Image (tube, one colour):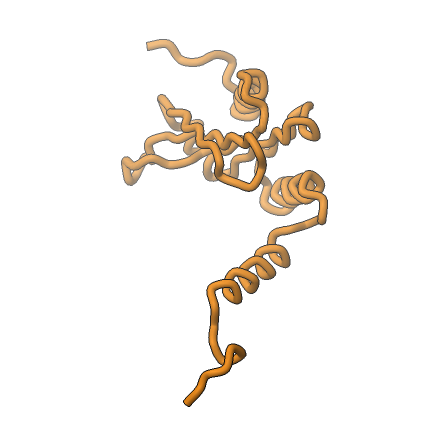
Length: 144
């Protein structure tokens, strides 16, 4: 029996299907910047996330967010760690920062805030930390 190409599934076929599903489900606009802004607005309006859009959003693609449950865990934490990862998306020079705390029940690392930027300086992260201080209403860090 000879199998025709149309009867075979190739990895490219799976990739194209996955890509189409991804675009249909996650892409809010053809412009990537506008898509992210719409997505952040949906998170804020529909799911009550705290969202951050940097002043330099269009030049450095700077944004961040955290959910209500993440905010609660962050408020209860005595300390946290900052993880920075690059090349997590198709955005050139993109850095993903994740604030991680110890989960109060499991004792394992728990991501509580995410922040993305293309700017390699400390300025966008300091603006995001100021945003976090404001939303969790911390005037200054605890000193041990």
